[in-house]
Image (cartoon, rainbow, N blue to C red):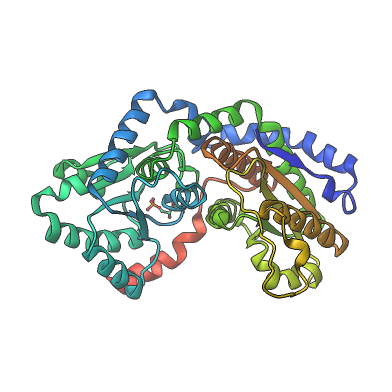
Length: 410
Ligand code: PA5
Protein backbone atom coordinates (compact mmCIF):
# COMPACT_ATOMS: atom_id res chain seq x y z
CA UNK A 1 0.00 0.00 0.00
CA UNK A 2 1.13 3.54 -0.69
CA UNK A 3 2.30 5.49 2.38
CA UNK A 4 2.04 9.23 2.80
CA UNK A 5 4.26 11.34 5.04
CA UNK A 6 3.04 14.89 5.59
CA UNK A 7 5.41 15.80 8.44
CA UNK A 8 7.44 17.93 6.03
CA UNK A 9 4.50 20.36 5.89
CA UNK A 10 4.49 21.01 9.63
CA UNK A 11 6.61 24.20 9.42
CA UNK A 12 4.10 25.69 6.99
CA UNK A 13 0.59 24.51 7.90
CA UNK A 14 -0.59 23.45 11.35
CA UNK A 15 -1.31 19.73 11.61
CA UNK A 16 -4.81 20.52 12.87
CA UNK A 17 -5.50 22.55 9.72
CA UNK A 18 -4.43 19.63 7.52
CA UNK A 19 -6.65 17.31 9.54
CA UNK A 20 -9.58 19.69 9.08
CA UNK A 21 -8.90 19.83 5.33
CA UNK A 22 -8.87 16.02 5.16
CA UNK A 23 -12.19 15.84 6.99
CA UNK A 24 -13.68 18.45 4.64
CA UNK A 25 -12.44 16.49 1.58
CA UNK A 26 -15.03 13.76 2.14
CA UNK A 27 -17.66 15.74 0.21
CA UNK A 28 -15.26 16.10 -2.76
CA UNK A 29 -14.77 12.36 -2.61
CA UNK A 30 -18.51 11.84 -2.93
CA UNK A 31 -18.61 14.37 -5.79
CA UNK A 32 -16.14 12.27 -7.85
CA UNK A 33 -18.69 9.47 -8.00
CA UNK A 34 -21.52 11.81 -9.04
CA UNK A 35 -19.67 13.07 -12.11
CA UNK A 36 -19.88 11.38 -15.52
CA UNK A 37 -16.63 9.70 -16.65
CA UNK A 38 -15.69 8.12 -13.33
CA UNK A 39 -15.60 4.62 -14.88
CA UNK A 40 -11.86 4.33 -14.12
CA UNK A 41 -12.67 4.03 -10.37
CA UNK A 42 -13.65 0.36 -10.66
CA UNK A 43 -11.53 -0.42 -13.74
CA UNK A 44 -8.79 -2.51 -12.06
CA UNK A 45 -11.34 -4.94 -10.64
CA UNK A 46 -13.66 -4.78 -13.69
CA UNK A 47 -11.02 -6.36 -15.92
CA UNK A 48 -11.69 -10.08 -16.10
CA UNK A 49 -9.33 -13.02 -16.30
CA UNK A 50 -10.47 -13.46 -19.92
CA UNK A 51 -9.53 -9.82 -20.69
CA UNK A 52 -6.09 -10.38 -19.15
CA UNK A 53 -5.63 -13.60 -21.14
CA UNK A 54 -6.54 -11.79 -24.39
CA UNK A 55 -4.08 -8.98 -23.61
CA UNK A 56 -1.31 -11.44 -22.72
CA UNK A 57 -1.93 -13.46 -25.89
CA UNK A 58 -1.72 -10.33 -28.05
CA UNK A 59 1.36 -9.20 -26.12
CA UNK A 60 3.03 -12.57 -26.67
CA UNK A 61 2.25 -12.42 -30.40
CA UNK A 62 3.77 -8.94 -30.63
CA UNK A 63 6.88 -10.17 -28.81
CA UNK A 64 7.20 -13.26 -30.96
CA UNK A 65 6.93 -11.51 -34.31
CA UNK A 66 8.73 -8.23 -33.56
CA UNK A 67 12.11 -6.84 -32.59
CA UNK A 68 10.45 -3.49 -31.99
CA UNK A 69 7.08 -2.20 -30.86
CA UNK A 70 5.84 1.21 -31.95
CA UNK A 71 3.35 2.76 -29.51
CA UNK A 72 1.22 5.47 -31.12
CA UNK A 73 -0.95 7.79 -29.05
CA UNK A 74 -1.18 11.30 -27.65
CA UNK A 75 -1.39 12.51 -24.05
CA UNK A 76 -3.19 10.06 -21.82
CA UNK A 77 -3.32 7.55 -24.64
CA UNK A 78 0.40 6.85 -24.46
CA UNK A 79 1.89 8.32 -21.28
CA UNK A 80 0.61 5.50 -19.06
CA UNK A 81 2.29 2.86 -21.21
CA UNK A 82 5.43 4.93 -21.29
CA UNK A 83 5.51 5.36 -17.51
CA UNK A 84 5.20 1.60 -17.00
CA UNK A 85 7.63 0.48 -19.67
CA UNK A 86 10.34 2.87 -18.57
CA UNK A 87 10.02 2.19 -14.85
CA UNK A 88 9.94 -1.62 -15.08
CA UNK A 89 12.36 -3.80 -17.03
CA UNK A 90 9.86 -6.55 -17.82
CA UNK A 91 11.32 -9.72 -19.28
CA UNK A 92 12.42 -7.77 -22.32
CA UNK A 93 10.12 -9.80 -24.61
CA UNK A 94 10.03 -6.95 -27.10
CA UNK A 95 13.55 -5.63 -27.23
CA UNK A 96 12.88 -2.07 -28.27
CA UNK A 97 9.94 0.27 -27.88
CA UNK A 98 9.49 3.44 -29.92
CA UNK A 99 6.89 6.14 -29.36
CA UNK A 100 5.14 8.31 -31.92
CA UNK A 101 1.76 9.91 -32.46
CA UNK A 102 2.45 12.35 -29.62
CA UNK A 103 4.11 14.95 -31.83
CA UNK A 104 4.11 16.24 -35.42
CA UNK A 105 7.85 16.33 -36.01
CA UNK A 106 8.99 15.11 -39.40
CA UNK A 107 12.53 14.82 -38.03
CA UNK A 108 11.38 12.40 -35.32
CA UNK A 109 9.27 10.41 -37.77
CA UNK A 110 12.09 10.18 -40.34
CA UNK A 111 14.42 8.80 -37.66
CA UNK A 112 11.80 6.27 -36.54
CA UNK A 113 11.05 5.20 -40.13
CA UNK A 114 14.77 4.64 -40.74
CA UNK A 115 15.15 2.62 -37.55
CA UNK A 116 12.24 0.38 -38.56
CA UNK A 117 13.84 -0.48 -41.91
CA UNK A 118 16.12 -2.99 -40.21
CA UNK A 119 13.65 -4.34 -37.66
CA UNK A 120 10.59 -6.58 -37.60
CA UNK A 121 7.94 -4.44 -35.92
CA UNK A 122 4.37 -4.17 -34.71
CA UNK A 123 2.29 -1.09 -34.00
CA UNK A 124 -0.14 -0.45 -31.14
CA UNK A 125 -2.23 2.63 -31.84
CA UNK A 126 -4.46 4.11 -29.14
CA UNK A 127 -6.97 6.83 -29.83
CA UNK A 128 -10.18 6.81 -27.85
CA UNK A 129 -11.82 9.49 -29.98
CA UNK A 130 -10.15 8.54 -33.26
CA UNK A 131 -10.05 12.26 -34.02
CA UNK A 132 -6.64 13.32 -32.67
CA UNK A 133 -4.31 14.78 -35.30
CA UNK A 134 -0.98 13.45 -34.00
CA UNK A 135 -1.81 9.72 -33.94
CA UNK A 136 -3.85 10.11 -37.14
CA UNK A 137 -0.79 11.48 -38.96
CA UNK A 138 1.59 8.92 -37.45
CA UNK A 139 -0.76 6.03 -38.23
CA UNK A 140 -0.82 7.02 -41.90
CA UNK A 141 2.98 6.82 -42.03
CA UNK A 142 3.01 3.49 -40.14
CA UNK A 143 0.34 1.96 -42.38
CA UNK A 144 2.44 2.77 -45.42
CA UNK A 145 5.50 1.15 -43.82
CA UNK A 146 3.51 -1.87 -42.63
CA UNK A 147 1.88 -2.35 -46.04
CA UNK A 148 5.27 -2.12 -47.81
CA UNK A 149 6.85 -4.62 -45.40
CA UNK A 150 4.06 -7.10 -44.69
CA UNK A 151 1.50 -6.70 -47.50
CA UNK A 152 -1.74 -8.50 -46.64
CA UNK A 153 -0.20 -9.66 -43.34
CA UNK A 154 -0.32 -6.03 -42.17
CA UNK A 155 -3.31 -6.94 -40.03
CA UNK A 156 -1.14 -9.30 -37.96
CA UNK A 157 1.15 -6.40 -37.07
CA UNK A 158 -1.42 -3.73 -36.24
CA UNK A 159 -3.17 -3.58 -32.85
CA UNK A 160 -5.87 -0.96 -32.35
CA UNK A 161 -7.13 0.43 -29.03
CA UNK A 162 -10.20 2.62 -29.65
CA UNK A 163 -13.21 4.02 -27.84
CA UNK A 164 -16.25 1.76 -27.81
CA UNK A 165 -18.33 4.24 -29.82
CA UNK A 166 -18.37 4.21 -33.61
CA UNK A 167 -15.28 5.84 -35.11
CA UNK A 168 -13.41 5.62 -38.40
CA UNK A 169 -10.49 4.00 -36.57
CA UNK A 170 -12.70 1.34 -35.01
CA UNK A 171 -14.45 0.69 -38.34
CA UNK A 172 -11.08 0.35 -40.07
CA UNK A 173 -9.84 -2.16 -37.50
CA UNK A 174 -13.04 -4.19 -37.75
CA UNK A 175 -12.93 -4.28 -41.55
CA UNK A 176 -9.24 -5.13 -41.62
CA UNK A 177 -9.71 -7.89 -39.05
CA UNK A 178 -6.77 -6.80 -36.89
CA UNK A 179 -6.78 -7.19 -33.11
CA UNK A 180 -9.05 -4.56 -31.55
CA UNK A 181 -9.35 -3.51 -27.91
CA UNK A 182 -11.84 -1.05 -26.41
CA UNK A 183 -11.62 1.85 -23.99
CA UNK A 184 -14.86 2.09 -21.99
CA UNK A 185 -16.82 5.26 -22.70
CA UNK A 186 -16.78 6.20 -19.01
CA UNK A 187 -12.95 6.25 -18.91
CA UNK A 188 -11.08 9.34 -20.15
CA UNK A 189 -7.62 9.26 -21.76
CA UNK A 190 -5.58 10.32 -18.74
CA UNK A 191 -7.39 7.78 -16.54
CA UNK A 192 -6.92 4.95 -19.07
CA UNK A 193 -3.64 3.35 -17.99
CA UNK A 194 -5.54 0.27 -16.76
CA UNK A 195 -7.15 -0.28 -20.18
CA UNK A 196 -5.41 -1.87 -23.18
CA UNK A 197 -3.84 1.55 -23.78
CA UNK A 198 -1.40 0.85 -20.93
CA UNK A 199 -1.80 -2.89 -20.52
CA UNK A 200 -1.16 -4.09 -24.08
CA UNK A 201 2.29 -2.47 -24.47
CA UNK A 202 3.05 -3.66 -20.91
CA UNK A 203 2.09 -7.24 -21.82
CA UNK A 204 4.24 -7.09 -24.97
CA UNK A 205 7.17 -6.05 -22.81
CA UNK A 206 6.60 -9.08 -20.59
CA UNK A 207 5.27 -7.19 -17.58
CA UNK A 208 2.94 -9.01 -15.20
CA UNK A 209 -0.26 -7.10 -15.92
CA UNK A 210 -2.30 -9.26 -13.52
CA UNK A 211 0.01 -8.14 -10.68
CA UNK A 212 -0.30 -4.53 -11.83
CA UNK A 213 -4.10 -4.75 -11.65
CA UNK A 214 -3.94 -6.54 -8.29
CA UNK A 215 -1.82 -3.68 -6.91
CA UNK A 216 -4.31 -1.12 -8.21
CA UNK A 217 -7.31 -3.06 -6.84
CA UNK A 218 -5.72 -3.36 -3.41
CA UNK A 219 -5.07 0.38 -3.38
CA UNK A 220 -8.66 1.03 -4.45
CA UNK A 221 -9.79 -1.11 -1.54
CA UNK A 222 -7.62 0.05 1.34
CA UNK A 223 -5.46 2.93 0.17
CA UNK A 224 -7.96 5.67 -0.53
CA UNK A 225 -7.57 7.49 2.79
CA UNK A 226 -3.94 8.30 1.97
CA UNK A 227 -4.91 9.52 -1.51
CA UNK A 228 -7.61 11.76 -0.02
CA UNK A 229 -5.12 13.11 2.55
CA UNK A 230 -2.64 13.96 -0.22
CA UNK A 231 -5.39 15.69 -2.22
CA UNK A 232 -6.55 17.69 0.80
CA UNK A 233 -3.01 18.67 1.84
CA UNK A 234 -2.04 19.92 -1.64
CA UNK A 235 -5.22 22.01 -1.88
CA UNK A 236 -4.57 23.43 1.59
CA UNK A 237 -1.10 24.46 0.40
CA UNK A 238 -2.59 25.90 -2.81
CA UNK A 239 -4.97 28.04 -0.77
CA UNK A 240 -1.98 29.29 1.23
CA UNK A 241 -0.16 30.54 -1.90
CA UNK A 242 1.85 27.41 -2.72
CA UNK A 243 0.52 27.22 -6.26
CA UNK A 244 3.21 25.10 -7.96
CA UNK A 245 3.80 21.46 -7.08
CA UNK A 246 7.04 19.77 -8.05
CA UNK A 247 6.97 15.99 -8.19
CA UNK A 248 10.47 14.74 -7.44
CA UNK A 249 11.86 11.27 -7.81
CA UNK A 250 15.32 9.91 -7.20
CA UNK A 251 14.82 7.09 -9.71
CA UNK A 252 15.65 8.28 -13.25
CA UNK A 253 13.66 5.41 -14.73
CA UNK A 254 10.57 6.95 -13.10
CA UNK A 255 10.94 10.14 -15.17
CA UNK A 256 8.02 9.19 -17.39
CA UNK A 257 5.93 8.38 -14.36
CA UNK A 258 6.39 12.09 -13.67
CA UNK A 259 5.32 12.96 -17.23
CA UNK A 260 2.18 10.84 -16.76
CA UNK A 261 1.49 12.51 -13.39
CA UNK A 262 2.00 15.97 -14.89
CA UNK A 263 -0.51 15.34 -17.65
CA UNK A 264 -3.01 13.75 -15.26
CA UNK A 265 -2.98 16.68 -12.86
CA UNK A 266 -2.45 19.45 -15.42
CA UNK A 267 -5.34 18.44 -17.64
CA UNK A 268 -7.62 17.56 -14.72
CA UNK A 269 -7.08 20.68 -12.62
CA UNK A 270 -5.99 23.51 -14.90
CA UNK A 271 -9.28 25.16 -15.84
CA UNK A 272 -11.44 28.17 -15.00
CA UNK A 273 -8.23 30.07 -14.19
CA UNK A 274 -7.61 27.66 -11.34
CA UNK A 275 -5.32 24.74 -10.58
CA UNK A 276 -1.94 23.90 -9.08
CA UNK A 277 0.80 24.08 -11.73
CA UNK A 278 2.40 20.61 -11.93
CA UNK A 279 6.14 20.36 -12.59
CA UNK A 280 8.57 17.45 -12.33
CA UNK A 281 12.22 16.93 -11.51
CA UNK A 282 14.48 13.91 -11.55
CA UNK A 283 17.03 13.91 -8.76
CA UNK A 284 19.88 13.92 -8.16
CA UNK A 285 20.45 15.07 -11.78
CA UNK A 286 18.12 18.07 -11.57
CA UNK A 287 19.74 19.24 -8.33
CA UNK A 288 22.36 20.58 -10.72
CA UNK A 289 19.76 22.57 -12.66
CA UNK A 290 16.42 23.19 -10.92
CA UNK A 291 17.93 22.64 -7.48
CA UNK A 292 18.99 26.29 -7.32
CA UNK A 293 15.47 27.56 -8.06
CA UNK A 294 13.79 25.16 -5.66
CA UNK A 295 16.16 26.08 -2.83
CA UNK A 296 16.24 29.80 -3.42
CA UNK A 297 13.78 31.05 -6.05
CA UNK A 298 10.21 32.37 -5.79
CA UNK A 299 8.54 30.88 -2.71
CA UNK A 300 5.32 29.56 -4.20
CA UNK A 301 6.55 25.95 -4.49
CA UNK A 302 5.82 22.78 -2.65
CA UNK A 303 7.49 19.48 -3.39
CA UNK A 304 6.20 15.93 -3.40
CA UNK A 305 8.92 13.30 -3.28
CA UNK A 306 8.04 9.85 -4.62
CA UNK A 307 10.29 7.11 -3.33
CA UNK A 308 10.39 3.33 -3.51
CA UNK A 309 11.39 0.94 -0.74
CA UNK A 310 12.95 -2.50 -1.29
CA UNK A 311 14.57 -1.66 -4.63
CA UNK A 312 15.22 -4.73 -6.77
CA UNK A 313 18.88 -4.13 -7.65
CA UNK A 314 21.89 -2.22 -6.32
CA UNK A 315 25.59 -1.67 -7.01
CA UNK A 316 28.39 -1.26 -4.48
CA UNK A 317 30.83 1.58 -5.08
CA UNK A 318 34.32 0.04 -5.18
CA UNK A 319 37.24 1.80 -3.49
CA UNK A 320 39.32 3.87 -5.91
CA UNK A 321 43.04 3.28 -5.53
CA UNK A 322 43.93 5.09 -8.79
CA UNK A 323 43.87 8.68 -7.50
CA UNK A 324 42.72 10.78 -4.54
CA UNK A 325 39.81 13.06 -5.46
CA UNK A 326 38.61 13.51 -1.89
CA UNK A 327 35.85 10.91 -2.23
CA UNK A 328 37.57 7.99 -0.52
CA UNK A 329 34.59 7.84 1.89
CA UNK A 330 32.36 6.62 -0.97
CA UNK A 331 34.19 3.27 -1.22
CA UNK A 332 32.03 0.48 0.18
CA UNK A 333 28.75 2.44 0.09
CA UNK A 334 25.89 0.96 -1.90
CA UNK A 335 24.47 3.40 -4.43
CA UNK A 336 20.87 3.06 -3.28
CA UNK A 337 21.98 4.03 0.23
CA UNK A 338 23.83 7.08 -1.08
CA UNK A 339 20.70 7.98 -3.07
CA UNK A 340 18.65 7.72 0.10
CA UNK A 341 21.04 9.98 1.98
CA UNK A 342 20.63 12.45 -0.91
CA UNK A 343 16.82 12.23 -0.50
CA UNK A 344 17.02 12.93 3.24
CA UNK A 345 19.43 15.82 2.67
CA UNK A 346 17.30 17.37 -0.08
CA UNK A 347 14.21 17.13 2.09
CA UNK A 348 15.92 18.86 5.02
CA UNK A 349 17.48 21.58 2.84
CA UNK A 350 14.28 22.35 0.94
CA UNK A 351 12.15 22.57 4.09
CA UNK A 352 14.79 24.87 5.52
CA UNK A 353 14.64 26.97 2.34
CA UNK A 354 10.87 27.50 2.66
CA UNK A 355 9.52 24.61 0.57
CA UNK A 356 6.88 22.32 2.15
CA UNK A 357 7.76 18.69 1.34
CA UNK A 358 5.30 15.79 1.22
CA UNK A 359 6.53 12.23 0.69
CA UNK A 360 4.82 9.36 -1.07
CA UNK A 361 6.39 5.96 -0.50
CA UNK A 362 5.69 2.98 -2.74
CA UNK A 363 6.43 -0.53 -1.45
CA UNK A 364 8.89 -1.71 -4.11
CA UNK A 365 9.53 -0.91 -7.73
CA UNK A 366 7.51 -3.65 -9.38
CA UNK A 367 4.18 -4.20 -11.14
CA UNK A 368 2.07 -4.36 -7.97
CA UNK A 369 3.56 -1.23 -6.43
CA UNK A 370 3.30 0.73 -9.68
CA UNK A 371 -0.32 -0.33 -10.08
CA UNK A 372 -0.97 0.94 -6.56
CA UNK A 373 0.89 4.20 -7.17
CA UNK A 374 -0.88 4.98 -10.45
CA UNK A 375 -4.27 4.33 -8.89
CA UNK A 376 -3.33 6.41 -5.83
CA UNK A 377 -2.54 9.37 -8.08
CA UNK A 378 -5.69 8.97 -10.21
CA UNK A 379 -7.88 8.97 -7.13
CA UNK A 380 -6.01 11.83 -5.46
CA UNK A 381 -6.20 13.89 -8.62
CA UNK A 382 -9.95 13.49 -9.03
CA UNK A 383 -10.58 14.36 -5.36
CA UNK A 384 -8.17 17.30 -5.47
CA UNK A 385 -9.88 18.83 -8.54
CA UNK A 386 -13.27 18.43 -6.86
CA UNK A 387 -11.98 20.17 -3.70
CA UNK A 388 -10.94 23.07 -5.94
CA UNK A 389 -14.38 23.10 -7.57
CA UNK A 390 -13.45 22.02 -11.11
CA UNK A 391 -14.44 18.96 -13.12
CA UNK A 392 -11.43 16.58 -13.29
CA UNK A 393 -12.80 14.72 -16.29
CA UNK A 394 -13.23 17.37 -18.97
CA UNK A 395 -10.64 19.33 -20.94
CA UNK A 396 -12.43 22.18 -22.75
CA UNK A 397 -9.19 24.17 -23.02
CA UNK A 398 -7.42 21.77 -25.38
CA UNK A 399 -9.96 22.40 -28.14
CA UNK A 400 -8.86 26.00 -28.76
CA UNK A 401 -5.63 25.31 -30.67
CA UNK A 402 -7.16 22.25 -32.39
CA UNK A 403 -9.90 24.36 -33.97
CA UNK A 404 -7.39 26.87 -35.33
CA UNK A 405 -4.97 24.15 -36.53
CA UNK A 406 -7.63 22.06 -38.26
CA UNK A 407 -8.94 25.11 -40.11
CA UNK A 408 -5.43 25.96 -41.31
CA UNK A 409 -4.64 22.35 -42.35
CA UNK A 410 -7.91 21.88 -44.19
O1 PA5 B 1 -6.42 12.77 -21.14
C1 PA5 B 1 -6.97 13.02 -22.19
O2 PA5 B 1 -8.20 12.96 -22.34
C2 PA5 B 1 -6.13 13.38 -23.40
O3 PA5 B 1 -4.80 13.54 -23.05
C3 PA5 B 1 -6.26 12.30 -24.46
O4 PA5 B 1 -5.78 11.08 -23.94
C4 PA5 B 1 -5.46 12.69 -25.70
O5 PA5 B 1 -5.88 13.93 -26.17
C5 PA5 B 1 -5.63 11.64 -26.79
O6 PA5 B 1 -6.98 11.46 -27.09
P1 PA5 B 1 -7.46 10.28 -27.98
O7 PA5 B 1 -7.19 9.01 -27.27
O8 PA5 B 1 -8.93 10.49 -28.16
O9 PA5 B 1 -6.71 10.35 -29.28
